Length: 352
Ligand code: CP3
Image (cartoon, rainbow, N blue to C red; front, top):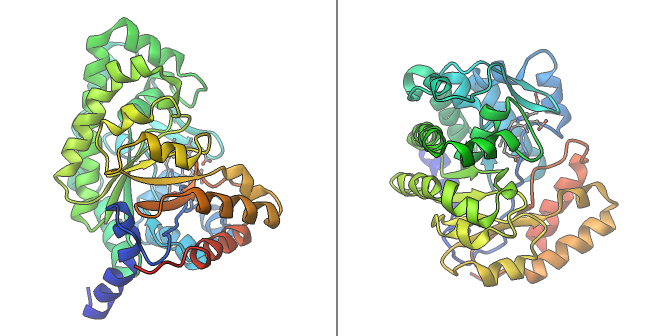
């Protein structure tokens, strides 16, 4: 990378990475989950003739889609354009990613024998496009690039249900009825996630977020017993990569203390928990990210502004990254997101 570019990256990158490390920043950094793809017309134009999986195999397209929200919104981070099921596709799990629906698995996993399909993921051989894409992104962008993986429970839920589901019944039934198979399944998915994260960081990703989107369907007791041990192993393994690690799930108000026990550097909070209450419940050593209700961004600007200012007023003074409580909704106006970034930056000026 040319010296000027790397200096620029180090400069602008400071804000997000410093907040991830728990430090106070000149302004509150902001980015949005699911900011790449989905709501942007320039993404839809590119995506028109291609399916999502083929797009992820083309590094120059991935770099372009990853950069689009940075250019348009002025956010403080890029998130790699990919999907949580991409490593599964790369090792040969037959699946499709349906627009507006999500991943659909050709042969759902239900028996111990079905687990054979989950062979180890070797990114250099199975998905050479992954490292290439991250390298292009980090070379072209002057903000940090966040890599990501799916949490073991969330990936298991797609594999076992065969697709998206509200309550993950088959998944939780397997968990309760065959603990041995369950542990083998989660262990395999943890290893796949670790390999994917390691490849992304080796190629230059500046941070890693674990999307464990669907753990909210678990009781605290079941989360602690059947999921937390493997999540701890995942976060212990990620620690070796030397970049900040973010842990996020939806509907996790009853799980925050347990999630914190995985010792992420940053905990992502959804909109159902007021940020100041999350701050009081999670150890001060863990930074927070969140948590504007994505639906608010569909409302008139005055409402978005009032709600965002309220959140900024209640958010921690240090170790805080502004984000939505879940992904940008497809119907969101890009103009709203752009104004929101400007608002967060202008209303959070602080002396470092
Ligand atoms: O932030 C970004 O936009 C980067 C790219 C990204 C995608 N998927 C691309 C995508 C990221 C970070 C993801 C993560 C992901 N994928 C999660 C975790 C985050 C969350 O929202 O909880 C989950 C659960 C998935 C699985 C998935 N993939 C679902 C549920 C869907 C359907 C909903 C939707 O967004 O339409 C997808 C499809 C998908 N993944 C699309 C994109 C851009 C849209 C479909 C398309 O363009 O073909």
